[in-house]
Image 1 (tube, helix red, strand yellow):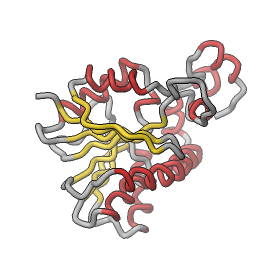
Image 2: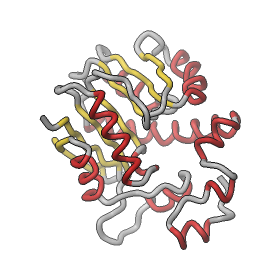
Image 3: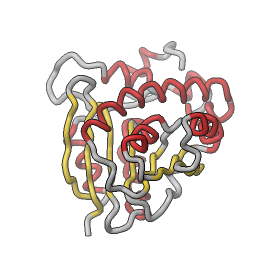
Length: 228
């Protein structure tokens, strides 16, 4: 997306998609296949970097099925499945993204282990799965929208389901960080400090199990489970 409105984004703290494109970025992607494909590939490269940290710090082998929420081309999901050969996956994203992902999943030989599901996580998500994975999802939306996503997952989950939230957090104290630059380039998204994101998860009806940070890339992996 153009940076012509960068000054307005900084001054207002609000995304400038409407001013730059005449519509929200996700609606624009649905109408422009080439730009959507480019964005998905970029997110795929970012997911590959995150996957190294997640696979090294999280054991997914106890999960029967992993749902990758807004998982784009499934780069993180397939890395987790490669590390856990007995686990299956569900790649969940918008219809135009899922249509692009099919050839990627097939090329990785994962067509028998990954179910492709299109939909809108503001409306409904796949139900009854073991692990719900959200990588770089919550930073795209304001608090009210994040709560809608999390509550929809909470509603779809069973009592044994777990949530895995993977994000690059805004540092609690001033320090050199790539997070603000990433946020500016990623559709005007806004990162959150750890306390704010934990609060969102609690408000949505989950309890934190653990959280850990891989300091090289600033990826933070937070595990949670539905509160009974």
